[in-house]
Amino acid sequence: MERTFILVKPDGVQRGLIGEVISRLERRGLRLVAARFQSVSRKMAERLYAVHQGKPFYDGLLDYITSGPVMAMVWEGPSAIAAVRQTIGATRPIEAEPGSLRHDFSLEVGRNLTHASDSVETARKEIDLWFRSEDLVDWSRDIDPWIFEQ
Ligand code: DAT
Ligand code: MG
Image 1: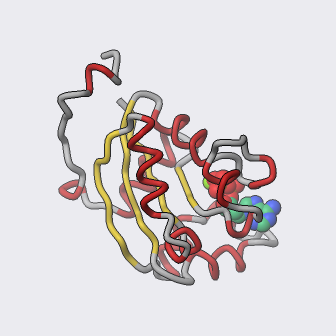
Image 2 (image 1 turned 135 degrees about the vertical axis):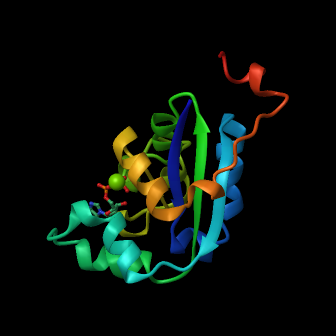
């Protein structure tokens, strides 16, 4: 079982799409582990996007992610990292697959609605950065055997 970190970015929150994002992840069969609605400090934003420091879009990216509250979440399931990346769609909305969140709800890379971890390593770092271990809920659903093979 894999865990991944997801943010509904400020544009998603402002546009009333928190429920849509959660609904799609639930419908996919993923299991919610933690969630918190919060504002993002400059420091948190710098840590989240440290790999992009120095890139031309970096300052705009920090302004965007700190521009309003976000919904931070952890979800789990088999291959959760890849599954969630697929559900949110490619970074550039015009390259995102039809049916993905970024395709269905956005147009511009600087307003692409959601963030999700891109590897096991970043998932671990991002979950540690946003949540304390006691915030992560270990639980199971009666329906799990119908969704998870093992
Ligand atoms: P993703 O969010 O799909 O993981 P990423 O990690 O490459 O994409 O980049 C993080 C965010 O930075 C992305 O969601 C939007 C912004 N971004 C990336 N590349 C960009 C570019 N070429 N121009 C403007 N913003 C960009
Ligand atoms: Mg990324």
